[in-house]
Image 1 (tube, helix red, strand yellow):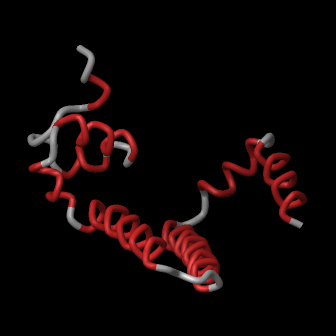
Image 2 (cartoon, rainbow, N blue to C red):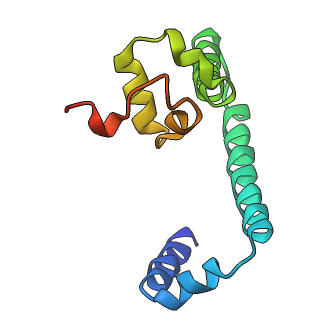
Length: 114
């Protein structure tokens, strides 16, 4: 089933009229669809995690990954004390969102080699 949907999406991606139809969609409708999509992915992840037996090691890995993943998103100022190399790696990963929030506090990763 998933392969058929993937093939259909690839096929639809070849036609520019599909992109135009999505660009004409109002922002609240697109936001609602995005919210539903990410909610479904989160529910699937929770279902996968709950189906496994969680020992101490798995609990630690889960806690650290959730703390790092959500911590940077919810508290972007947490990176002020981090070394510059870590900031640049996280900035590249999060698609420059941190630069937009704190433009005077860090370097632009596109200019780090200059």
